[in-house]
Length: 568
Ligand code: NOJ
Ligand code: CA
Image (tube, rainbow, N blue to C red; front, side):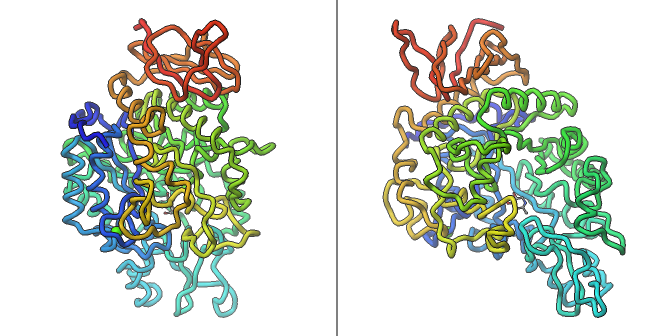
């Protein structure tokens, strides 16, 4: 690896650094293992800071690293203000912050306010305390139905499948929207609210620059004594702020309090909401400058590789950010979805546009259904398209290596509760589960865990990881790693005002072209047939050009090119 890059990323030096940052998501248990126990850790991250610097990202988003029994990959948090001893220590956390900041990279940490784990001190206290106690009131406990309360208070199912209510030894039941080990907090309780403010300050004081807010749309709930049935819940409107469980208007009172804490710091701490809501208008509320400030837009994760879909999504989201004053966000892959190289290598499913990834995991993730080369080619074109857009680009570890989803995980090695809580018949939208995108990264061609660490890896790595390792791609012209490095370098140089103009002359059919200020043109050919390359200085291309019969270079199918043109 070339270690020559030592400059600070220019965007990271401004107070508005987050508006157009390229943010790299690290799923810590699967990034790099510093002590050889098979689990990624903070030492591993610190050792890879030069890699992150050379990649050219402006910020890291760190998925949960808190103490956890890993009932849900760390999103079951035992203590919101500590580091899992399997991952490191608070001192190492400080060291990591210093190492990242030392090279100009910001740090966003995941915060999980909808639920704790069942090992959290408060939940243990709740179990030891009687019905009606203050300790129980921090969570959502109810008496059961039936003569002796032997039936759950409602027939709701959890997001991961299986029941959403679990009974405790004295007969009461608690709500968990996700796994059994993830009891939901009652955000009407003032101690819950205060404790999270304390947590936000705890990490902000340690130098954390921002927060990714898990299940941001779930905190405020309105549950009376008589609970609606699952069918009734489903029939209730979800877009007017009155649904008992999701996206209630008063959730924004919580975020207004958080904003006041963020603004105590200089520069103000930032936040990005994971909010699954019904309409763009509802999403805008989370992105408000008086609230979290930015919200994920997952539209591209659910889109076919198609010029019309991509254009509509970009147009809608830019219009939305113009209303909120926030910047747009773009995501193709994260720790919850099928990697985009794989999604784009799957045949479209009739009548289910954009759902091929979800349907594929539901069907058991057969490896032979992936057109691997085509998928990667499209993913590279899609990423180059994304990196030219205004706003923040959220990249997921391993996509810079062109990794595919790992299909070949034996059932007994799977970890995701979405798998373990369901049967093939009852599987929810996470299907077989999300382990296939969480397999530890390959750093070298060989070694017990492809350089992830000196021991094994907590999820099995396939043999094909060798050719997608950092070692295999580093310095290799045309590799996906070099494409990301080059695109991120150029992006920092070219990034200007958050505006985009569609180039109507070049767009049409399978081709989509737009310009950014300063004559930066991005053109994507979503089709199969080559098209003309526009005039201008060619900066980067996601695949090699092809020659026309007269020798002129053409833009082949499934390819994006960036050019610099002499326009304002
Ligand atoms: C969303 C997270 O991204 C996912 O990984 C997790 O399982 C749920 N929230 C529950 O915390
Ligand atoms: Ca380790």
